[in-house]
Length: 462
Image (cartoon, rainbow, N blue to C red; front, side, top):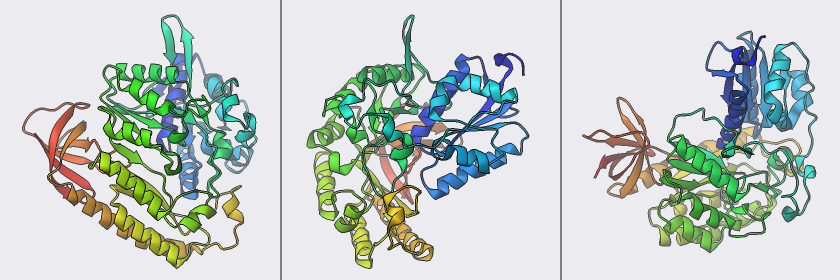
């Protein structure tokens, strides 16, 4: 292969919005090195994998195998590559290389090496929590590679190592990486590491850069946004950050995701529910509602605590959007636990509900529990509760008919696709907008909800 400007790389991003940020860092690094980012006819395919749960791992492996059918080298990065490293390289010859998070700063040279026929050493899986001090406040002095955190200093001020690979008017913005919680079902801390907040100055600089790229809505992402600032010695850092982000010219909405209910402070609820330009939106990680089962998951709260929090939110912002995900079939989940979860969902009136069947994850505490449910039982519970959740979400959408709201335009084609302020991109429903006047992608308009189609809404401009 000749000069780097002739190298064409196709980048595929799988998994969550946090991975999308990491992919845009990789794209930025490759762009800075003179590579061409293409969607077809590439010299090499770079796949940013997901390794969260069994279905996501399978999707990542299937994507790698399918990409290898093109005949060009395939390089795997991301969570699956970090989590399994040498094992993945040994068992998946379709991947020409498997790289670590620590390889991201040198990704351009790594790709050149692969194209030159060199055999790269895959990362040895390790517990990345051990790479940083146990005490959160001691972590800021360690220069440890965190994907999606990269900003460099140079002439003209800070430079964001990121290139947008989407033209959508919303963009994820990573505020932290890793997690210090020890949920018994989750392996993320092992391969993403301990919780590390980004500096507020760096986040604001990246947000301003995104605004310059035409982004109108910032979606703050991390493994646990309510922990933001604990390693900076500032328990109200997230509130401070939000107030700085809404002051950026060009940014119309700021949305927070991945909130841990046990860590939410009343002052944070108030800021999100009451501050102009901050979407009154609460992405709450409940996971279940039965208190005893939640303790077994090493989580806190339960039905009454969660209903109290929802009530607190709706007292401040009656039309706030609230979504959550739930694990069904966790080891030891009794019929009473399952019934309590169903009852909670009926009372909570959430706008969006994700139902996931429990799957055994390597190197998690729950994998050793002896009271595992059969896959048949888990599938049965998932199927039943998903149907209940769909009905509840559809009813919640119907209840919003007649509501006055704001909508952001996502796409203008044969139809106008939009989202109400209580809907996050990708994960929640959308709005079919009726309008007799021209609208622009990324613009925000007042509208009235006039109908619903399942979980989606129909609205007219006011």
